[in-house]
Length: 573
Image 1 (tube, helix red, strand yellow):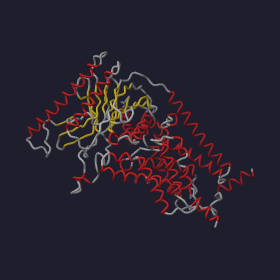
Image 2: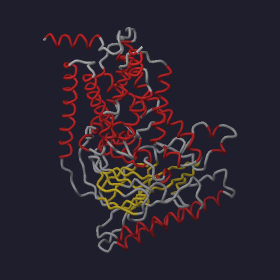
Image 3: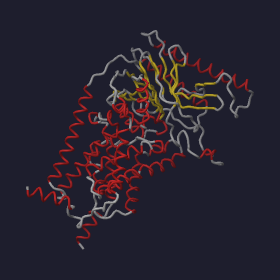
Image 4: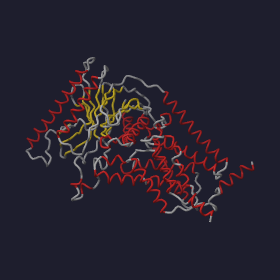
């Protein structure tokens, strides 16, 4: 009876190890940021993988429930955006909880059929992170490697394998901690422990040496100077015109404050997503714009409205740029604008974009970028709008068009690649754009992301978003300038370090003078191909070993047969 109780305590519970892992993962990321806990956060899951007693369906359900709670707590800031976001928030938490559950399931399947955990765990973890970065539009937030962002030297390998490689490194350190625990519990022999130690030490040494080398490489000055503007403006899906005008004027005032605060020549002012739109976005139209069905007047009246809107857009732009120039006593050059602004194209159909508009020193629109990666349930809701009777439930503003790819904006010789909102939080979006620029033979000097995280108040979602941008900076080897309503407004260098940052929820600005980094990362050249290979390898391994009989130990508290034989051979030698 005593042995039975002992066995149940050690092997019978699933909830306790799952809770331990979820808690350690949460503590390692914002808001607590005890990054070093990530080096042992996966150990409880590894113990579940090697557990010798049967693992029934109910056990996986319990595991899923625990990690659903982890994701819901970690991303609870999403529900602040709108009452309708509670449903998507719950759905997202349940969906993301599938991945750690499948990690245990797949790893157990391969481990029980003779595969080494040293090989299985990193492969399966990376394969699953790759999958969630592509499936259902993808999401990169809270990747395991993001936990190490406070220690830049440990994340420089992201320019080779993206955040996947950093996550694999964290799993390997967890494997060392697991093997140490197994050795202390006398469930593995000295040779196994030394083998795992040598592997972990060699990988860690390589990561550190590479980090020192990459961070020691020199960059060059000579890029443009940018003023990143942030305000804490409350936002809603529907804003009345007076409130929109008020927000615009507030950003004008903050830009003027930025001009007055420095003797430096500011080459461009950067405003967050949609803050320049006011009641008048940038309007594109064919020679004879076709009025939308909702327009009550004649085609000539519609054309007059379009011309009046364009004229107003130009007049307010001239007024803003002239005011900013007048505050620059040491410069006679009109500053340029890179602003988050809606773009509407009137053709056969009305096409609306969440965009970034570049206005040159001659007050003319030099180019614009349409967001390529839209937010599901935020900027569009799949299927619902087409179901009769449900269209009225969709808030206004959810019906945006997808942009046609990355663009470059020339700010006085500095090439800027704009991104909008969640695009830096889906790592492959920016990395793939970098790859496309590489094929065109014209690379950006700076990545500029404009976002409106006022939806999430001051929750940790904002810090998670910032960490995604930091990892993208390393993967692309380009500095990132982030201008955000509410935050995160930051200047990130090409090694992922935060050079300057404004506190979340404050009104202000920061002046950024990024350095030119001419390095071209392997991650930009290869994209997700190495991570995709791990998924192919996992599937191939599963097919190869599917007919093997799973091994189980005869006594739960004893080492498995392979470990016992290894220990005996070590003792004899």
